[in-house]
Length: 71
Figure 1 (spheres, rainbow, N blue to C red):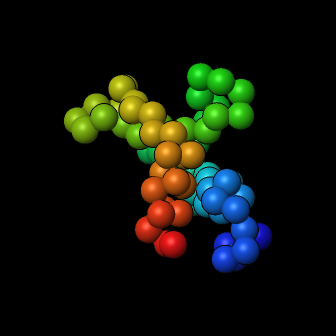
Figure 2: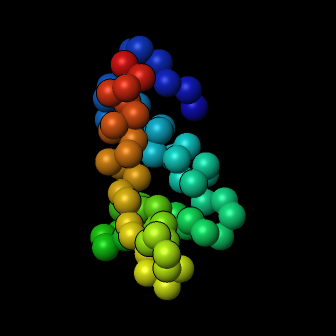
């Protein structure tokens, strides 16, 4: 699916979130997983200096930021 000018912001964010899930779940250092609530996806990234501790970044938040930048 492609981003189009006639789509709502929520539709655009959903497309970006789906694309982010594919791009960010790559090499084993980062992983896209369900987080906290069903349907909420986050990319889990190791803390600097530690592969035992991971920090979660919500894909929906990143997608919203991208949507604003691309508008």
